[in-house]
Amino acid sequence: MWGAFVGLYSLKAAKLGALVIAVEPNPVSFAALCENIKLNNFGNIIPINIALSDHEGLGYLNIVDKRMPSSIAHISRQICQNVVCINMTTLDSLIESLGLSRVDIMKVDVEGHELEVLKGCQNSLRKKLISKLIVEVHTPVRVRLLGITQLLKSYRYKIDGIFEGVLYARAK
Image (cartoon, rainbow, N blue to C red; front, side, top):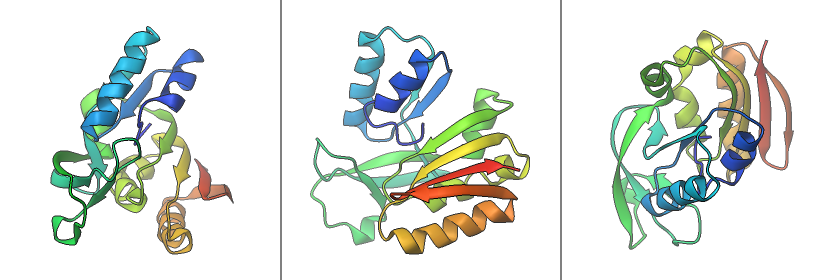
């Protein structure tokens, strides 16, 4: 789960017995995610406090409202009062560092940073390490979908459908 927020979907997947890697860069949401994992006594969720992108390094996270999701943006475009400096990595690097040989389902909800996350896992896409993808596409949906579908199709992923801003794809 990339953009795990407080863990709603992570908890559901873990309840079904899946090993869940829950990535959440927002420190407030990450603390709530860890608390939810602890309260529900799940040992099969690995929470990771980092942002995924198309490169490694530092980034900036807009904390728009503590009760709402955040967004990654360049500091030069900031209009928010609360900006947090965060570490970023690529999904390829994360998959390698965790020693994963496959990812059965990858859910991405990263508030407008979808294409950058997917660009950061091109090696995994090329090798078909990721079987299925669920990508929540944020506005402007039409513009973002074009780049996302082109990238996935270039690695021979089949787009199964797009419903209410959520793209479903799988390896061919």
